[in-house]
Length: 205
Image 1 (cartoon, rainbow, N blue to C red):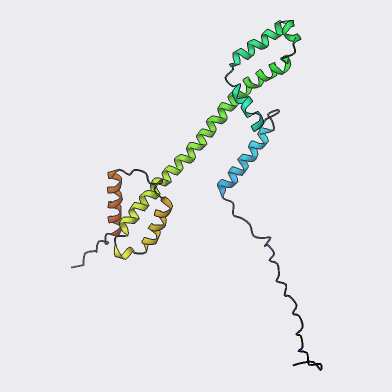
Image 2: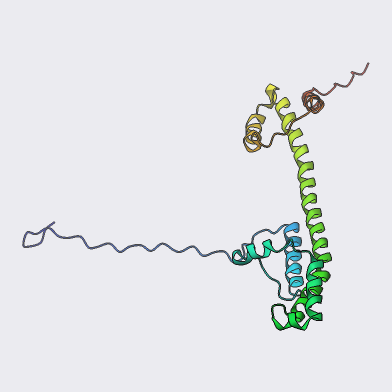
């Protein structure tokens, strides 16, 4: 089709179609586990407790070296130096040690040192609890892995091959502890028991 002048007609421009923007579902929520809820409550309580401590400082790279290099000075020496300034007007006159701030620091350290010890002991207990529970689960999971490898020898259990390959992939070499001969024998025995046919009941006479 052409115009009267002989020039081909130009088709009208097509309007771009605007795709709808997906709107997040406001009812969709992320599942929070019981332990995640407990951990969140515990951390919130810690944050609240932290507000009790006056002038709590966070480590910073600009002061870290200064703080670290002065930790070997004994508390006894600090107390003796403060006492010396208290008893000597000449030392007070140089104004190199604020007696009020010094006494406040010594009292602060004396009061909160047991708190640090308690927190440190708690942190160690929490870490050990996590490690202990992981170790128990790891022992069970490794046993299942070795049993599965034994069961997979049965042609009727061919479906286990992909699952064993997945476990082997995620276990890697670093995750394989040294397994005793007794543990391996126990795993083989368990695998044999799992694949053994069920005993048939005796026929009635």
